[in-house]
Image (cartoon, rainbow, N blue to C red; front, top):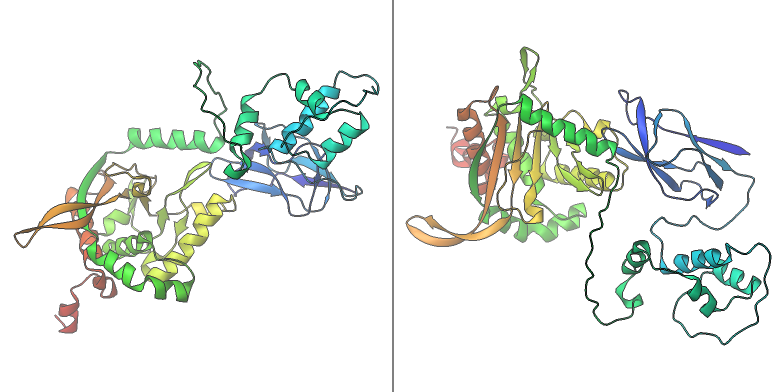
Length: 419
């Protein structure tokens, strides 16, 4: 029975996608639910999985742009069990298997070669390669001699192996090179480039800065981390705390959450926060919806699930659209200070940075505190300086006094006394 695998739709507004990469080779035997290809759209990357087990026949080339619903490949389920698909990132054993095929390529008919002295080697041989060597009476030495040159791909495959599988060799002096690597820009990267340029050209973007003393939050996190892990099964991060602080600060400065729509200004009563996540395919921004109504633990759990889906290419377009504000954390990569760029049609974005111990003045005394620079980039067409600065100061106050997150940003003593 022949089964057709059609190109899925990433979202309602998308009619064309690009076949990014095949994860198997033509003719491979694939298992049911095995991922066989990556489909790239302007908004997200998703995978194509086999619906049944069988032998695959590829119908679309990598990099080809096709319409939604077109048949990408077929699976012949009449083919019983076979060898599993070979990963594109080949291991050392697969390289040897291909070498055997390369040695045999010029041979028009079976050639019997007298057995020679076996060459000792620690190179692993796949069962398929060993069968071919026995069938054509090839020794290890003859196979290795048939490898006329070692390519960059071969070296990268060896480097990808665990260190214990690679013999230590004397350092080799780096050779002079003028080579260039060229690869086609993905649909996601092209769309991202267009959006970034559009933001610079179509908005009046400014950035305001402040710094936050992270002592209280870090103390709370360290003190209660074990209990948090026991109850929720994951560690408490700073992103969920900042997300809650942003959602609370929005209640005092709603224009930060507003968007320009033609000649109108839309100000949602809800706060949908986009969290920038770095993935192998580039930056993605999954959305935490109604952050103002969720606890820090609920935000942390949802954030972990969305980030994992983004990194494993399981995230949907719906989970990447509709945000009203974005947070990005360059501090995870060591950034001390930066000016984040707005994610349209949003009007502002908060940039978190690296936490560094610095001397600061507290009550007339110089003390060492863990400090973080924060930056708010905003569209000055809709957000005034007063609101942008006030919003960032409010976020600073909430992080430095985390108990205020329980009192809607107000001083707990004042709430206690009804003031």
